[in-house]
Length: 621
Image 1 (cartoon, rainbow, N blue to C red):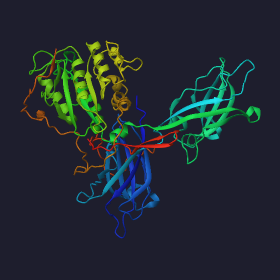
Image 2 (cartoon, rainbow, N blue to C red; image 1 turned 60 degrees about the horizontal axis):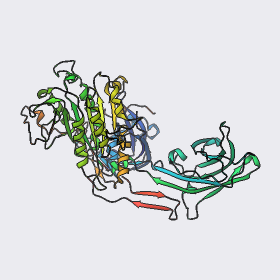
Image 3 (cartoon, rainbow, N blue to C red; image 1 turned 180 degrees about the vertical axis):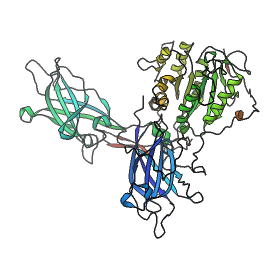
């Protein structure tokens, strides 16, 4: 499944562009491309307008793109000096100034402005200028509308007693068609019904349009389903929720056209409140750090690493399934981790430093600092451990879950210090300590932690899907129910069989933003102010910043195993990029820390009308 995501508006400007005209200044246009990973091609999204004679253009054209946390969304901006305006789309007739690649995560985590140097193979010794990108989430979809309605003096529509009224809300559409967006419960036998308050997203209510007509229809309920209209009223959300300097609309007459505009009752709006909803992007843009913890299964059921049939076998020309999972999920999360350091553990093996089978040991064998740098560091640690560990068993998760809980619980998460942990467990089999693991998962639901489990190999993972808790919340052995769903299990081969290389990341992480938001809301933590970041590209034209730097000693033969403590656990316009633009290799990109919006706005029907609650200013993590 793919997360619903958000809409992001990209605004682009440039400074100090290279001047390619002799008698005047360059006439720049910016083209935006996105990487289509299905066939590894660049697809044109759209272009800006041309601005004549300007080396510091601020383009009016905006680009609206979809944002999905669980995907690497790679984009490229290419800036041209337009020499032939009549054939502006034919880039062979224009002069290429420079280009820059970025992921949408780069822009999201950049705060106010993301800046990057334009580069060109034609001008390696000259500065081609800078491109500046502002990413703003489309605002009007981020409100929840809460209403409380009642009626008075409704008409009787039957000779046999009072009506059983309920109401529907429909949003008007073109050609007077209506789309029902909400239906209340019926209140039995009354002319003065009072309905319970309800909450609906503004996108569902009126598509984010405060001036769109809303039709409020009151009906008499009956068992046959042949409901009889009592009356109808039309209003807009703006008139209901905002004061506009005057007293807002608090009641409207219900009209039944069948009775020549006869007034059939009064519809009262006791409260209409529009509350700004924070998004995952808000927190990331405000500096909230996402920290990845990785746990790898070293049980004997994987097979000996030297056996070509082993799940741990290092194939000369392809990644094994463990490596695929690390790269697929890790490349997404790397964008959101500012220091690029990841805690990596193994379980289910005998290793030289510990007596017996260890169900939680650091892969760099340093109990004080189990961190490695970047995705390459994780892979290096994994490969080294395969050479020194004796694969054993059984497959127990409890110790790994305890370790992740210890990270999440000892980390002080507050309004000023915002961070969230994601535990990635890669395993080949069914866990043997299911009850104990469920107890830990229920405990973990209280902490800033989400858990992703990727099943590799061809085992029957049917029982593992119980952990997803999609239909029934997990319960502790003491009866306690999990406070929120924090876990997702995905079988790797099911995703590979789907033929989409990016589906694993989507399936494993699509739920994380909602899990994250539930924790922050429950903890009373709101996003911080965005901060600004400027990223300089690597000097070579085709080089994006590397995903990691190997700080661990695995790249050399001189590996020192450090045992510093004994706290371990034992037992549409689909055009490819023109040939005039040099092709650049698409690769995941991670460069940023995290950060959100200006203020929380509450539009209320209370006497004060609009209430603005500013964010608490806090230093960035």
